[in-house]
Image (cartoon, rainbow, N blue to C red):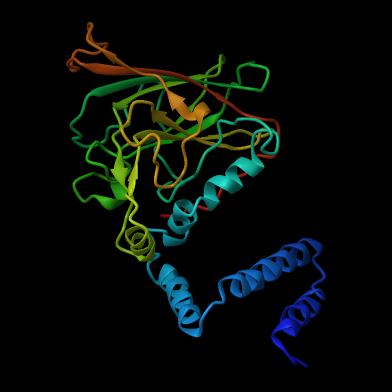
Length: 295
Protein backbone atom coordinates (compact mmCIF):
# COMPACT_ATOMS: atom_id res chain seq x y z
CA UNK A 1 0.00 0.00 0.00
CA UNK A 2 1.27 3.51 -0.88
CA UNK A 3 1.34 5.74 2.19
CA UNK A 4 3.57 8.62 1.01
CA UNK A 5 5.54 10.02 -1.88
CA UNK A 6 8.64 8.17 -0.66
CA UNK A 7 6.94 4.76 -0.78
CA UNK A 8 6.04 4.95 -4.50
CA UNK A 9 9.44 4.12 -5.96
CA UNK A 10 10.17 1.06 -3.75
CA UNK A 11 6.70 -0.31 -4.51
CA UNK A 12 7.21 -0.03 -8.26
CA UNK A 13 10.70 -1.51 -8.09
CA UNK A 14 9.41 -4.43 -6.05
CA UNK A 15 6.76 -5.53 -8.56
CA UNK A 16 9.06 -5.00 -11.55
CA UNK A 17 11.72 -7.19 -9.94
CA UNK A 18 9.54 -10.23 -10.65
CA UNK A 19 10.41 -10.17 -14.37
CA UNK A 20 12.27 -13.41 -15.27
CA UNK A 21 14.53 -11.66 -17.81
CA UNK A 22 17.61 -10.41 -15.92
CA UNK A 23 18.46 -7.70 -18.44
CA UNK A 24 14.88 -6.40 -18.41
CA UNK A 25 15.03 -6.23 -14.61
CA UNK A 26 18.31 -4.32 -14.75
CA UNK A 27 17.10 -1.80 -17.32
CA UNK A 28 13.71 -1.19 -15.75
CA UNK A 29 15.17 -0.87 -12.24
CA UNK A 30 17.52 1.86 -13.41
CA UNK A 31 14.85 3.51 -15.56
CA UNK A 32 12.33 3.76 -12.72
CA UNK A 33 14.87 5.05 -10.22
CA UNK A 34 16.07 7.76 -12.63
CA UNK A 35 12.56 8.63 -13.84
CA UNK A 36 11.22 9.06 -10.31
CA UNK A 37 14.34 10.99 -9.28
CA UNK A 38 13.78 13.33 -12.24
CA UNK A 39 10.19 14.02 -11.13
CA UNK A 40 11.33 14.71 -7.57
CA UNK A 41 14.31 16.87 -8.60
CA UNK A 42 12.23 19.09 -10.89
CA UNK A 43 9.10 18.98 -8.65
CA UNK A 44 7.16 18.10 -11.79
CA UNK A 45 3.70 19.65 -11.82
CA UNK A 46 0.61 17.76 -12.97
CA UNK A 47 0.27 20.12 -15.93
CA UNK A 48 3.88 19.50 -16.95
CA UNK A 49 3.36 15.75 -16.62
CA UNK A 50 0.34 15.95 -18.93
CA UNK A 51 2.33 18.07 -21.38
CA UNK A 52 5.10 15.47 -21.39
CA UNK A 53 2.68 12.62 -22.05
CA UNK A 54 1.15 14.62 -24.90
CA UNK A 55 4.64 15.16 -26.33
CA UNK A 56 5.34 11.40 -26.28
CA UNK A 57 1.97 10.66 -27.88
CA UNK A 58 2.68 13.12 -30.68
CA UNK A 59 6.06 11.52 -31.39
CA UNK A 60 4.18 8.36 -32.25
CA UNK A 61 1.51 10.20 -34.19
CA UNK A 62 4.14 12.00 -36.29
CA UNK A 63 5.84 8.73 -37.31
CA UNK A 64 4.92 7.13 -40.63
CA UNK A 65 6.48 5.10 -43.46
CA UNK A 66 8.65 8.00 -44.61
CA UNK A 67 9.38 9.75 -41.29
CA UNK A 68 10.53 8.42 -37.92
CA UNK A 69 9.97 11.05 -35.24
CA UNK A 70 11.18 8.74 -32.46
CA UNK A 71 14.62 8.40 -34.05
CA UNK A 72 14.69 12.15 -34.65
CA UNK A 73 13.94 12.87 -30.97
CA UNK A 74 16.72 10.48 -29.91
CA UNK A 75 19.05 12.33 -32.26
CA UNK A 76 18.34 15.91 -31.14
CA UNK A 77 18.68 14.97 -27.46
CA UNK A 78 22.11 13.39 -28.07
CA UNK A 79 20.90 9.98 -26.92
CA UNK A 80 21.52 8.36 -30.32
CA UNK A 81 25.13 9.52 -30.41
CA UNK A 82 25.70 8.53 -26.78
CA UNK A 83 24.42 4.98 -27.36
CA UNK A 84 26.50 4.74 -30.54
CA UNK A 85 29.73 5.73 -28.80
CA UNK A 86 29.05 3.46 -25.79
CA UNK A 87 28.66 0.46 -28.09
CA UNK A 88 31.48 1.04 -30.58
CA UNK A 89 35.21 1.64 -30.58
CA UNK A 90 36.21 -0.80 -27.85
CA UNK A 91 33.07 -0.16 -25.83
CA UNK A 92 33.50 3.60 -26.09
CA UNK A 93 37.10 3.62 -24.84
CA UNK A 94 38.54 4.75 -28.19
CA UNK A 95 37.49 6.92 -31.10
CA UNK A 96 35.41 5.09 -33.65
CA UNK A 97 34.19 5.40 -37.22
CA UNK A 98 30.71 4.49 -36.02
CA UNK A 99 27.96 7.09 -36.24
CA UNK A 100 24.21 7.55 -36.20
CA UNK A 101 22.00 5.54 -38.53
CA UNK A 102 19.71 8.53 -38.84
CA UNK A 103 16.04 8.49 -39.79
CA UNK A 104 16.43 8.03 -43.57
CA UNK A 105 18.16 4.67 -44.20
CA UNK A 106 16.26 2.31 -46.52
CA UNK A 107 16.93 -1.43 -46.56
CA UNK A 108 16.93 -2.17 -50.30
CA UNK A 109 19.33 0.25 -51.98
CA UNK A 110 19.98 -0.57 -55.65
CA UNK A 111 23.01 -2.85 -56.22
CA UNK A 112 25.60 -0.76 -58.07
CA UNK A 113 28.90 -1.72 -59.69
CA UNK A 114 32.04 -0.10 -58.35
CA UNK A 115 32.58 3.13 -60.24
CA UNK A 116 28.87 3.51 -60.87
CA UNK A 117 26.78 6.58 -60.14
CA UNK A 118 24.15 6.87 -57.43
CA UNK A 119 22.66 9.93 -59.13
CA UNK A 120 19.39 8.45 -60.42
CA UNK A 121 17.49 11.60 -61.32
CA UNK A 122 18.51 15.08 -62.38
CA UNK A 123 20.45 16.45 -59.41
CA UNK A 124 22.41 19.67 -59.93
CA UNK A 125 25.63 20.10 -58.01
CA UNK A 126 29.39 19.61 -58.36
CA UNK A 127 30.37 16.03 -59.15
CA UNK A 128 31.91 13.92 -56.38
CA UNK A 129 34.14 10.90 -57.02
CA UNK A 130 34.64 8.87 -53.84
CA UNK A 131 37.01 5.99 -53.09
CA UNK A 132 36.60 4.29 -49.71
CA UNK A 133 38.54 1.37 -48.26
CA UNK A 134 37.15 -0.92 -45.56
CA UNK A 135 39.77 -2.45 -43.26
CA UNK A 136 39.98 -4.33 -39.96
CA UNK A 137 41.45 -2.82 -36.76
CA UNK A 138 45.04 -3.69 -37.83
CA UNK A 139 44.59 -2.19 -41.28
CA UNK A 140 44.08 -5.35 -43.32
CA UNK A 141 41.58 -4.89 -46.16
CA UNK A 142 38.21 -6.63 -45.94
CA UNK A 143 36.87 -7.97 -49.22
CA UNK A 144 33.24 -8.72 -49.95
CA UNK A 145 31.71 -6.14 -47.63
CA UNK A 146 28.22 -4.98 -48.61
CA UNK A 147 28.19 -1.19 -48.31
CA UNK A 148 25.05 0.92 -48.42
CA UNK A 149 25.66 4.55 -49.40
CA UNK A 150 23.06 7.29 -49.10
CA UNK A 151 22.92 11.05 -48.71
CA UNK A 152 20.74 14.10 -49.16
CA UNK A 153 20.70 15.96 -52.45
CA UNK A 154 22.26 19.44 -52.68
CA UNK A 155 18.81 20.92 -52.01
CA UNK A 156 19.01 19.32 -48.56
CA UNK A 157 16.41 16.58 -48.96
CA UNK A 158 16.45 12.78 -49.20
CA UNK A 159 14.53 11.02 -51.96
CA UNK A 160 11.63 10.08 -49.68
CA UNK A 161 11.15 13.75 -48.75
CA UNK A 162 11.26 15.20 -52.25
CA UNK A 163 8.83 14.44 -55.08
CA UNK A 164 11.31 15.93 -57.57
CA UNK A 165 13.68 13.01 -56.97
CA UNK A 166 13.07 9.48 -58.20
CA UNK A 167 12.97 6.68 -55.64
CA UNK A 168 16.44 5.62 -54.48
CA UNK A 169 18.15 8.76 -55.78
CA UNK A 170 21.47 9.22 -53.96
CA UNK A 171 21.44 5.59 -52.79
CA UNK A 172 23.43 2.53 -53.80
CA UNK A 173 24.79 -0.78 -52.53
CA UNK A 174 28.41 -1.67 -53.32
CA UNK A 175 30.70 -4.65 -52.68
CA UNK A 176 34.33 -4.09 -51.66
CA UNK A 177 36.97 -5.62 -53.95
CA UNK A 178 39.89 -7.88 -52.97
CA UNK A 179 41.74 -4.87 -51.51
CA UNK A 180 38.75 -3.62 -49.53
CA UNK A 181 37.91 -0.74 -51.87
CA UNK A 182 34.64 0.48 -53.29
CA UNK A 183 34.18 3.62 -55.34
CA UNK A 184 31.35 5.58 -56.83
CA UNK A 185 30.19 8.83 -58.36
CA UNK A 186 27.66 11.23 -56.90
CA UNK A 187 27.32 14.95 -56.28
CA UNK A 188 28.89 16.75 -53.35
CA UNK A 189 26.50 16.55 -50.37
CA UNK A 190 25.12 19.67 -48.76
CA UNK A 191 24.04 20.50 -45.25
CA UNK A 192 20.34 20.47 -44.54
CA UNK A 193 17.70 21.07 -41.87
CA UNK A 194 16.17 18.10 -40.13
CA UNK A 195 12.34 17.88 -40.30
CA UNK A 196 10.81 20.32 -37.83
CA UNK A 197 7.08 19.80 -38.42
CA UNK A 198 6.69 17.52 -35.38
CA UNK A 199 7.30 17.73 -31.63
CA UNK A 200 11.08 17.54 -32.08
CA UNK A 201 10.93 20.76 -34.07
CA UNK A 202 8.83 22.36 -31.34
CA UNK A 203 11.50 21.48 -28.80
CA UNK A 204 14.27 22.99 -30.96
CA UNK A 205 12.32 26.23 -31.33
CA UNK A 206 11.62 26.40 -27.60
CA UNK A 207 15.36 26.05 -26.95
CA UNK A 208 16.33 28.59 -29.65
CA UNK A 209 18.33 25.91 -31.49
CA UNK A 210 18.91 25.73 -35.23
CA UNK A 211 17.81 22.55 -37.06
CA UNK A 212 20.85 22.16 -39.32
CA UNK A 213 23.14 19.20 -40.01
CA UNK A 214 26.53 19.65 -41.69
CA UNK A 215 26.97 18.00 -45.09
CA UNK A 216 27.82 14.28 -45.00
CA UNK A 217 27.65 10.89 -46.67
CA UNK A 218 26.13 7.87 -44.91
CA UNK A 219 27.66 4.38 -45.02
CA UNK A 220 26.44 1.04 -43.67
CA UNK A 221 28.98 -1.81 -43.95
CA UNK A 222 27.84 -5.41 -43.53
CA UNK A 223 29.73 -8.71 -43.65
CA UNK A 224 29.44 -11.97 -41.71
CA UNK A 225 32.02 -12.18 -38.93
CA UNK A 226 32.26 -8.40 -38.52
CA UNK A 227 30.24 -5.98 -36.45
CA UNK A 228 28.02 -3.97 -38.76
CA UNK A 229 29.49 -0.49 -39.14
CA UNK A 230 27.21 2.51 -39.53
CA UNK A 231 29.15 5.65 -40.32
CA UNK A 232 28.98 9.17 -41.69
CA UNK A 233 31.73 11.16 -43.39
CA UNK A 234 31.38 14.90 -42.95
CA UNK A 235 32.55 17.86 -45.03
CA UNK A 236 35.07 19.36 -42.63
CA UNK A 237 34.62 23.00 -43.66
CA UNK A 238 30.83 22.99 -43.42
CA UNK A 239 29.70 26.07 -41.43
CA UNK A 240 27.75 23.87 -38.98
CA UNK A 241 30.45 21.28 -38.35
CA UNK A 242 30.76 22.47 -34.72
CA UNK A 243 27.02 22.75 -34.08
CA UNK A 244 25.39 19.66 -35.60
CA UNK A 245 21.81 19.63 -34.34
CA UNK A 246 22.05 15.88 -33.59
CA UNK A 247 25.56 16.00 -32.00
CA UNK A 248 26.81 13.47 -34.58
CA UNK A 249 30.23 14.87 -35.55
CA UNK A 250 33.36 13.27 -34.11
CA UNK A 251 36.94 13.72 -35.34
CA UNK A 252 37.21 10.30 -37.05
CA UNK A 253 34.19 11.19 -39.17
CA UNK A 254 35.74 14.23 -40.85
CA UNK A 255 36.41 13.58 -44.53
CA UNK A 256 38.88 15.19 -46.94
CA UNK A 257 36.59 16.47 -49.67
CA UNK A 258 39.11 17.98 -52.09
CA UNK A 259 38.06 20.64 -54.59
CA UNK A 260 39.53 19.83 -57.98
CA UNK A 261 40.00 22.30 -60.82
CA UNK A 262 42.05 19.96 -63.00
CA UNK A 263 40.79 17.83 -65.86
CA UNK A 264 37.65 15.98 -64.72
CA UNK A 265 37.58 12.15 -64.72
CA UNK A 266 34.54 11.92 -67.01
CA UNK A 267 33.58 13.86 -70.18
CA UNK A 268 30.26 15.05 -68.77
CA UNK A 269 31.85 16.57 -65.65
CA UNK A 270 32.60 20.27 -65.38
CA UNK A 271 35.03 21.94 -63.00
CA UNK A 272 35.16 22.37 -60.15
CA UNK A 273 34.58 18.78 -59.07
CA UNK A 274 35.41 17.04 -55.80
CA UNK A 275 37.23 13.90 -54.76
CA UNK A 276 37.09 11.99 -51.49
CA UNK A 277 39.33 9.20 -50.26
CA UNK A 278 38.48 7.68 -46.91
CA UNK A 279 39.03 4.60 -44.74
CA UNK A 280 36.42 2.80 -42.64
CA UNK A 281 37.35 0.34 -39.89
CA UNK A 282 35.17 -2.67 -39.09
CA UNK A 283 35.60 -4.58 -35.84
CA UNK A 284 35.23 -8.35 -35.47
CA UNK A 285 31.83 -9.31 -34.15
CA UNK A 286 28.30 -10.28 -35.01
CA UNK A 287 26.82 -9.07 -38.28
CA UNK A 288 23.27 -7.78 -37.97
CA UNK A 289 21.18 -5.19 -39.73
CA UNK A 290 19.17 -2.51 -37.93
CA UNK A 291 15.44 -2.13 -38.39
CA UNK A 292 14.88 0.37 -41.21
CA UNK A 293 13.49 3.61 -39.75
CA UNK A 294 11.60 4.24 -43.03
CA UNK A 295 10.43 2.12 -45.97
